View 1 (cartoon, rainbow, N blue to C red):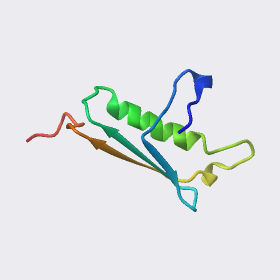
View 2: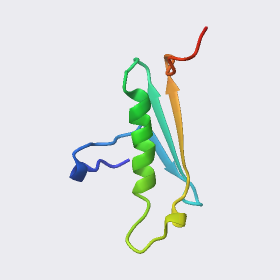
View 3: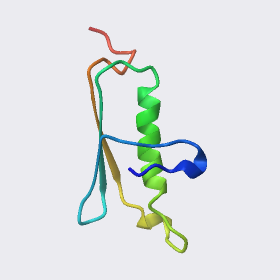
View 4: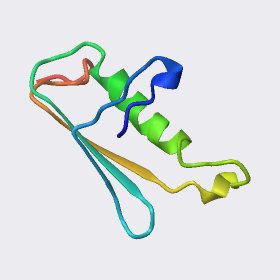
Length: 81
């Protein structure tokens, strides 16, 4: 995803693909545990979703965003071993 510096936050994902139906697929990998990873991944998906619509487009024109996160740690604190 290209950086959007107008809002002060840069979004750079590992892999972003768009298929022929304009559906976006984002792959994000995290090797080292990062406390804010879940929120960051959600922000990536939300930003990609929101950037689809241009002036004059309808909300139902927005296509799904698929985010695959590959992590080297447990991302959910409620899971028990």
